[in-house]
Image 1 (cartoon, helix red, strand yellow):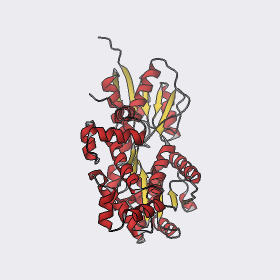
Image 2: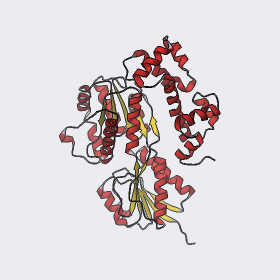
Image 3: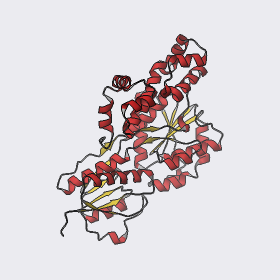
Image 4: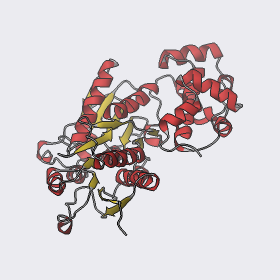
Length: 396
């Protein structure tokens, strides 16, 4: 029998969590919308198109295009293409990418919130996503009155433009990175261009007895759980919304295969949040009691912790704690308790289908109505509206 199924090739690496997340997003779209016959070849990010596929006759491609050679091979196939890496615009296609401005703002805001005033960036010079994140990080912190120290590798290492080449060479830079970090004021907040770079920075600190996170706090990008958990201590990381990137990329390709004109501008998808692990869980303030209060709040805010509980444990007066806390963070302990609870509740709304009553219990609120009131006051919209805007799928 004749079929109207579209033949779609997926050139997306499965070797990293980012690519696997995109593939799952494409799969979700195909399950719910697409009558597609999908061809997916297991591959790494920089692997060339297999020769036997160069004569493939299909209808469209969803790819993560790493270099010009892969871009040319894809272009030669002459079908609508969506690139999910945001680096090589197909001649007949469109691009999506994680929004570098929001990625860097999340990292910067986390560091600022916990009191850091010295900032650094370590990336891979010449690699496109690293350069975009560097530019956005410097620009945002400059708007907040802060400077950023930027690491520059030894000139003999700066011959790579692909990420895998840089990552491999980066394993040889531990001593140079450690020496550079030792020269900077501390406590220091370091933003790494990706998780591999973040792990390399942690290794450099361990070599030189720089304490992580007390002297050097580190956040990476991509939230590749294997890489983050192999770091010691485990690496905090910005979580890209790879499912949404894959899903929206597939939807865009579907419309292009139906004759719609692709958008000219890159479509930027905001990240989901920060996966907090030990590498960034420091409090960069000199006031020990304020630091202890912040630690108590981070650890127990979602268990129903009150300001009076903090006061009782630290044996200081409430007025003294509030005055000193405000001097360090420009907000009160009560505001910080709510900030921590709201951060947790947003993740639960995005990543689960839990009822509001369960989320209220998990974030320290007495009831669903109390939680909803607090959320509306904090976020400017109801928990239900927030969930609709941020979850990939609607709740059943």
